[in-house]
Image 1: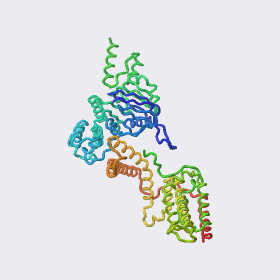
Image 2: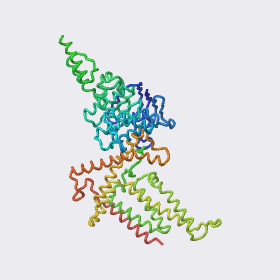
Image 3: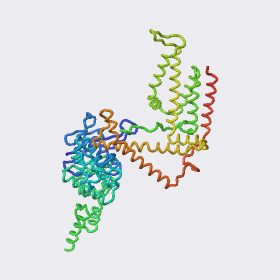
Image 4: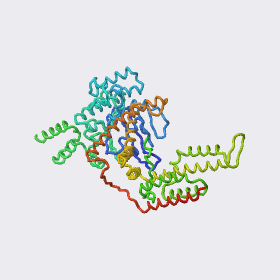
Length: 288
Length: 265
């Protein structure tokens, strides 16, 4: 689903002495089937921005177009359920939202709310539990008996069960161990490709952003600061540092390499494997 | 959504009333609750009103804020006033229509009762407007200190109170977060028949309880890890200090009481 954000502004507690502007003049086009990484320092407005994408927050000014649904400041009250079904949000620490007696019932909560029949919801639950890498036997357990990592997976399954067209992920790997992080991110990436989803990933990790994203958007002080392809963004190291961020470690290494060796390697190696490959080629060239 | 809720109603300012010791304010407010009932004629009520007006102006709290605190009980005030006007049968008849009569005494009684209620609420809200919740708790702990002799866990009560106060904003944030997460999964908290709506709160309440218990356990652990062992021999970062203005305020209140005794009929 195509997402188009125009001149979006959001003010918290509007009309009180505590009013605070969290977003200002954000213009962002996200084409269909794009994997967008939304990066920014704490308090830069990332979370505020994504909560607009399914109508949890209303714009103070400007508009958001999600497929055929338009949300705009001062717009009429509309039924947001169809939009919320299409745009699934995995919140930070989603395991805090579990509440049902069994994992199965908790996963069925979303689908049932969106009008799926009990039978179908059950089938969906058993599908998504496999997807997130948990055995079927978990379905009959209480979510509160699971480990933290398993709870996270169940909560993610609860969102995937809605079969969204847009997947919005708010730091989905925060607090997980390294192997868990990779597994969860790989899961999202696979889904993104297989189901042709439009994905918005909020993250602090430049490494994750560089590895999975087609586009990167950088937020700074409530404004859209940079937006472009990963290698375009990583050429703006100064600007990134201004926003309290930096390029991924692999790119840092490449920049140093170019500086010391006088070579001009492209900054498109984002994983360690890619970096090793391009260095190998560079060394071979030098040797010959 | 929930961020519009302001916890407590403390109004930050620098006034003689703000600077007073919370103990003297608590004593004064408590004392005031009783002496309001001494007034029974125009002069004594006038005296009380004057005293309250001076206190309000000394507090530097805008009248707008005071009014906000009064709003919820205004209906009650009007209702009791009307009740007295219609039901008291004293003095001259002022108006008569069939069985319906209004007496002079009724009007006076109605006004007095309304005044009494308003004065009570004004003074007590002035206490919470000029004192932070933590100060009130500290003051209460001190004042109730003597009850420890009878094995009343005064310190523990005060601690419980300050912890609850401290965690109200946290709980509100948490509520909002979980509410949003469930709304993103299609939950609806705002529409539908009452029975359905009550049911809709289960997905909100269960996670809140779970996280509250978890947080309580973590807090207890953290307190023990830092050697907390109850109130015995504990010193304070912000010790309460009794100044001459506190003594002055209480003396003023006592003289008000004496005048009320002299002037009441």
